[in-house]
Image (tube, rainbow, N blue to C red):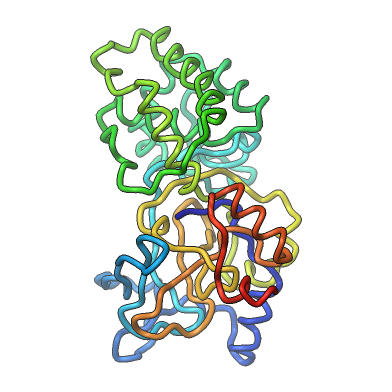
Length: 332
């Protein structure tokens, strides 16, 4: 299952302060070896496998489980996106590749796109060289006028496939959403605009064989429940904690992204882990409390501060399931 709008609420901040009243924010940037020795993440060392495994759960499909005890505040693992895209309203404010906030300086530009570094500009070539060949005014206006963000991810993925940088079945391992006939019908306009943009750009038919209506809809069905709304803190992890309550009401999203491993985390309205972005689109999964070996790691897909009925409605409408976590069963 997957997630959008993961919100850091004051409930979680209180939990961290209660568990670690004497610790400074910098302690959250350490992890531990199996022997319990603290290691600074910034020290160059051979990366260790994350202390997790993916396995089937009893009722929620695949899930992520701890392979050893994980301490509260510990970094569980990092994750780079399979595909990402900045929000249309943030195109001038964030890096077109890594979604890092640009501030007042831009290190590199390429045909209308801004990048935080020359390295990001080079890495963007896997999609940007194809993207700049087409006119996206109609497609972007379609997304903007309908308040859509997921078609932007499909566009970028299609560019990656055409360039040869990605396989058309890149997202097939992820769970798809169940789409109604009405939802599928609404997607047809986006498919037509996407296909037309590539055709008008004289992209060879052989390079677009994958780009069928079925492919577009299947990709959209996976993105729908596996896309994360990216909210970059732009500072240290401690800054994120101190401003968590304020961010609930703020429009902090800089884009959306789909990841592999984070998409296997199941939902809980009282989670033991959460995902944060401190600098760019690279995600960090952190433990919210002590987690025992063998325990399933769960994140909250929505704003955990909402009441019971609001959470149930949003989860059913957005993800198609009724939450039966302990918190919901208690009526909280």
